[in-house]
Image (cartoon, rainbow, N blue to C red):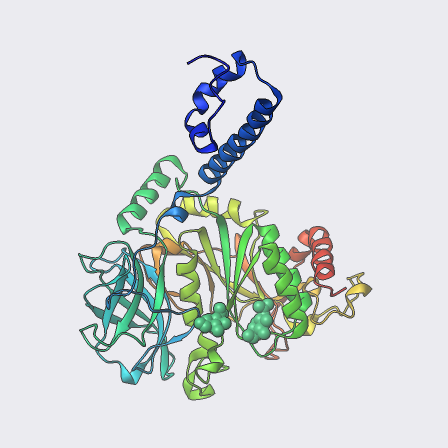
Length: 485
Ligand SMILES: *[C@@H]1O[C@H](CO)[C@@H](O)[C@H](O)[C@H]1NC(C)=O
Ligand SMILES: *[C@@H]1O[C@H](CO)[C@@H](O)[C@H](O)[C@H]1NC(C)=O
């Protein structure tokens, strides 16, 4: 082909197939004005074409371009995915909360955290959604949490196996019949967490023993689980100060199960969840049951222990399993406080090295009673006066625990080594319990109101003040962002 003649007479479709030769044409061609115009237009089209190719290959992940599997056959699934944190289970009196992959116990693959009515437990079957198709059913093992405190409903684990012919499992539901004929009303739970076996866990602990460091990296070192927020709770100052204390101690995430909160606290918590420290989980337990305000059925009545505290704590452990090295199980009026270290990480590095087999670290609780409030003397913060709640920095008198009564402790756990928990103790775990001495760590408990009036020996304890200079500006900033100052 002669240079200079290669463009003339070509239409746009044929041009693109000749674009390789064009380079040569451009260099050697001698063109008149019409030809130049045509060439410019052609180059423009080419440029757009290349641009589109670059955009689609660089910016779109491959999965987005794959075609979804065809639907329509009777055995396709899931029909109805639950988007609630409490899902009533069809044909039963029970509720499902969340499903997690859990292969740490031999013979089981899936754990469904749920709320079961203890006197109405029937035979159940697991049904899975595998790559968009229904599986065969597998038998279910129902394990009612042994701490139910006499309430009719209890935190319950449902365990089952994934059938062997099920690939790419995505959702699970429970049936009262072994066949999957009537599944149209069933609501499906997405299966969370990826596979972790107990063997892997053991290996990682063995690694830890040899080189002093756990290999796996986590998104967070510490997560605090606040079991339930209820009764229009509105203690804004306490929440803001405590959250900032947690943050300074090294906590990366605070999961809060929310039944109800007061208007100002809602604003503060929205600010914190937008900012990322707090993760709110809706917990409308009162819409399904009559939750108890107390912990003992014979004394407090109701359907379920303390707004479902055991359900939320267990859910929080599984929710945190893949992403947090440790989980702290305490309430918002409690701060697990190192007394020899500046933060939780350096304390836990030491404790875990000293006690490599420990899965749970038991922390003594010390009350900083309401009655010793200094009532504003030491807090130069008149700007906090209009903000609802109390100032925890005024809690500087610690009472010795009464050695004659049982003093419940709270816990720092390794979530991957814990199977089932209660409030003050773990019920099932793959490791040891270590009672942390009080000079290393104790829990600062600041009750929201007066407690019993017996007098124990008291000590001045200004540990919270060590963090004061950092806490106060951060609290001010978050209150300001929430429109509360
Ligand atoms: C759940 O889904 C229903 C309808 O499918 C919708 O009306 C509702 O707003 C959803 N709720 C949440 C919390 O996403
Ligand atoms: C807490 O739950 C209540 C009731 O569902 C809701 O109105 C409120 O917005 C929630 N608060 C936050 C911070 O999510």
